[in-house]
Amino acid sequence: MLLRLGDAGTIVRIFKTRCVCFDTVEYKGRPRKLFQTEMEKLVEFPVYESAEAHMSTIANEDGEPAFSAENIQHAEKWIEQQMQEIDAAFRRNQSLGLMGGTAVIKRSSKDDQKYFSHDGFISGRKVGEFIGVIRGAHGYKPKMRKKVKMPHVEVAEPDTAAKA
Image (cartoon, rainbow, N blue to C red; front, side, top):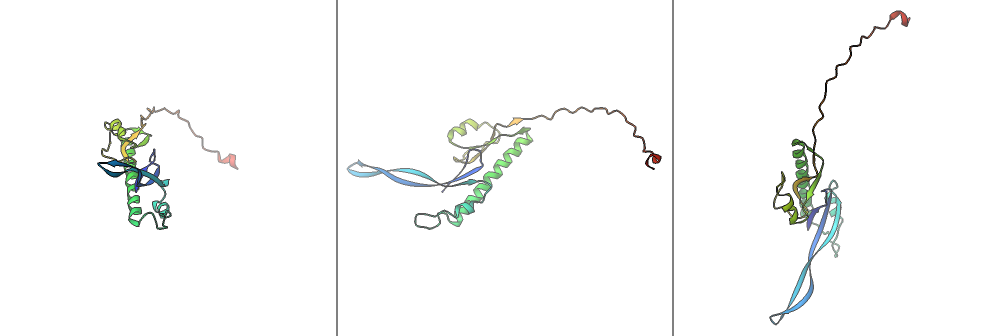
């Protein structure tokens, strides 16, 4: 089971990997099988929805559940950890005077090379995990406020005779 976040960290994708024999070659007088790893997407859902609700409905070819209770619990913990790290990165940026942006989800080792010098970068992340960086955040400065002197206005008391 592979867990990966979508581009902006708003979608969770769960994959299953399997080895498939795609060819047989002769090597030192004996046949050798060549294998290739394939990834099959099992389910995709928004991060704010329950992993259990989506994962418990998937069954294997033999009708058995595809995910054990431990797998579902692991997925929920992983999703929660990723969301907490993304939230912490946005809060860190806010404390530095930065707003907006998008969470950077690792797509390849090129992301490590591109973002390693950014504040908050987390090395050693797997593909599909948040790397600690918010892309596209921009600085903001509160506008200077001027005190405007308001003119003094006298309010006349309502005439009691006018009411009668």
